[in-house]
Image 1 (cartoon, rainbow, N blue to C red):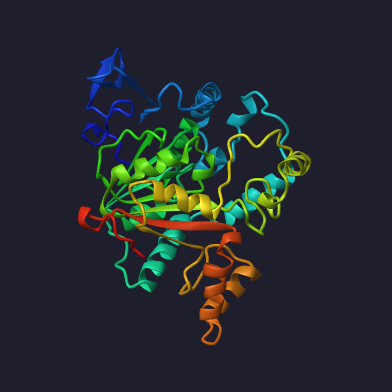
Image 2: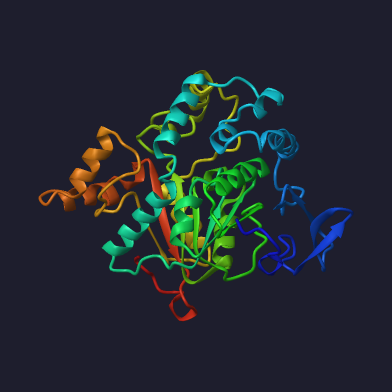
Amino acid sequence: MENGNLIENFICPHCKDILLVRKEGQDDFYGCRSCGASFPVFFGIPDFRLSDSYEDYEYDMLSCRELIKSYKQYDFKTLWKGYPWKNNLPSRGKVNIKFEKIYWKMEEETFLKHGYAILYKINRYLELKNKPALTRGVSFEAGGAYGLYTLGFSQYFKRVFFTDLSLRNVIIAKKFIEEKKLENVTIFCSDIERLPVRDNMFDFIHCNGVIEHVRNPQNIINEAYRTLKKDGIYMILSPNKYSLWIEPHYRLIGYGFWPKSIRMVLVRKFRKVADLKGTILISLRQLKMLIRRSAFKNSFCVYFLPKNLKETSRLGLVRKITVFLFNSFIIGDIFDFFVNKVFISVMPYHIALCSKKRSEEKNNEVNL
């Protein structure tokens, strides 16, 4: 993990001016020469969150202090699942045991496959559209949670940057990166609505299951455009509000089709969640509208799965049947038409690939 003096990569998330490395006692911190903002380094991790970035800041910092007490003693998987450091934290309400078991079973199934699988899906789609594969330059994991994608990314890209709004998550990701000895990964904590990185820095930006958790989705798309290099690719995976499948956060079938009052009752009863705060799902129409309002304009495509998919990271009968149908000589094209055209608005999630075109191409519609 390369987290040394990386001052040349970072700028002030508030005013976008240059940051300087400064020292206060034994502690390093980043200071802005223009607006005077300062950003601490906690446990070797730069923390670029602004004061209003994170409503759960105090609880997050309390979690971090408990987490680092167990950091050296336990491996990544133990810290990832929250034991024993979570035992010393105040209760945050009831936990739905059934949901927790489903979640961990799903994560264990795809544990080390995350990064490889998503790059495989993207490159298969680009191949289908006769486009070159993703450039093996600099990638950015925007809102990467526990860092599981970094394993696949670090082997594909020359350099990987990783961030998450929760410093607790970044510390757990640090453990994963250290255990896997990933030398080309740089980590920091930040709000992806106000990134502390310079313009035109990344060849590929990955934002998977994050857009539904931010306050202003338009901001993260605008920031992605700013920090993406020319001809770079920005990938958004957005869980669908109007999916006919099981919604991943609340395990509710047809989530967006239920009236809000009934939806809330069902979520409280079966998921044991007091409210829907922090997760605002968007539809296919809303996703397209957000991208078109940004500088990407029409330089994007949206799909569910590429037709030439040969395998999936997760197992199961439905996935095996899906792969078989996509690759069927007789009905492959028909199945693709229905999945990625006719019924795409009710698929479980949507993948948007946005391309930052050069100025002379910017106003032309691009079909990736």
